[in-house]
Image 1 (cartoon, rainbow, N blue to C red):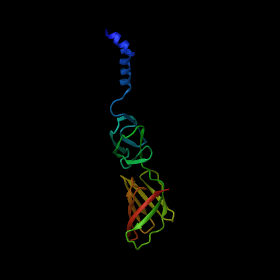
Image 2 (tube, rainbow, N blue to C red):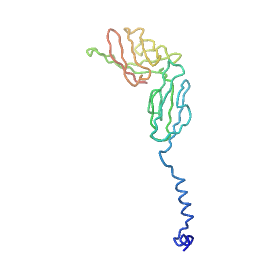
Image 3 (tube, one colour):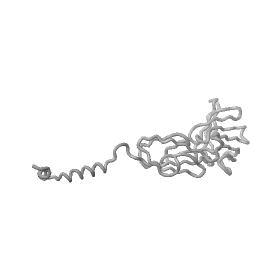
Image 4 (cartoon, rainbow, N blue to C red):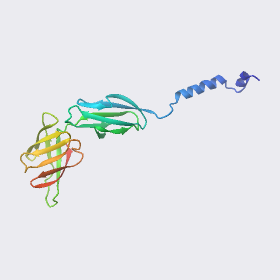
Length: 199
């Protein structure tokens, strides 16, 4: 019996088997899947990965290296609009369609401030709201809803709030952590920590 008759007897032509195998192998992607990262750099930010769409294999560690064009300013990065990171660090590609946005931090806004004194016998004032304004992102005046005033500076990630008219109070912290973690303060011969909640 020749080869052609064996193929016909099986009820399925040999050529069709070969074609099916080629179609199956061509439709399969072997190995780790490719994931897309879309990068948006706002004005005043430079670094890598550059703006645009980038394709990485699943579980790839992507190094982030962003800085402000004005080196005195501070950069923050948001992944998918929720996960916040500093300008330098890394992320792992666990999924597809990630969006990363890097921007210069602008702290000009209103914050509710709460003080905690190191000397626990001192009663802290009720939380109060301060409002930071100014011509740029590095410094300006602030007002306190209790009627006090002062000056703020935000240079090289160092934040300083200095009152003009409230017992020499000075609140120190970092630009990146404002509204996320506590800082320290001195004033009226006392010291302690402070927190801020953006309003």
